[in-house]
Length: 264
Image (spheres, helix red, strand yellow):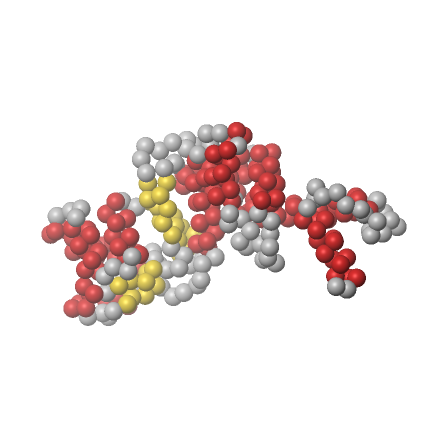
């Protein structure tokens, strides 16, 4: 290893482990600050940048916790999940699991069970926004498909589409916490709620789903045909109402850009 490489590795080790006690004899003392202060400036800047990334990805979590508790959470997260890549896009992906562990084992987060779902929601919003940009299927495309092959059609969903179930009032909380100024809202919800998250052009969208749509979409995500989607709906409603409901759901999905193609 060259002297330069050894110097770079030593510098990196000190930055990544700010609590590590090490000699600073290798740092020039001719600067405007003492060697340990010079090193601490870089160490602080590194962690401040990582905190900024997490704050950008989880703005509602920051508002919900407040600066002090959020900063403590991020500091612990950085120590547990240090960045290993040049890009910081995925640095915060483990925060929901990390928060779940904190809620279970750290008295400072006692009772904050909603926080796990809030971080999951915020990370999924980012995933939807950064998903691959593909063309979407249109009503005009659908109109060109012969009616007789509809039963066997299978649908390709847009890569930005995600489904989450919430026990807490998460989407409403997120809207309240990210509004200007932030407003208060209860985390309580009376029942589990299925939600869709996706990107429509350059705008991230989310909405709740009724139970029949949830089950129909799950069948689509499983690779089921249009006929199988109709069979799923028939378990929830009168068979005479199924064709109209299935067609209405499909039309809505296409209009919202949730379908990117079909398989015959």
